[in-house]
Image: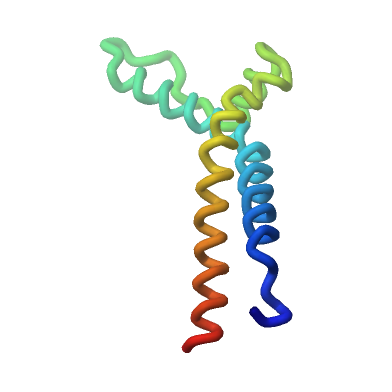
Length: 106
């Protein structure tokens, strides 16, 4: 490859690390989003309307910290990392491989 191309192993390691870190860091937001979706789904199915429907991401995050501590924010983070690290690795490795191939042959 050209001098600008990274070795294949570097691409794999960098993309896997990036996917793992990004999915771990965004786990609290994903957890809050999921709880909002579940709460809204349950409200739609309820016979009587709920007293309040004003939950926000920030309110849910605060509630989790109060009830479960900071560790509660990262519940399920391991599963997200196990899903997104390989997915990001595959996506970025394919992208970089095809980019390099087409730069040389097109």
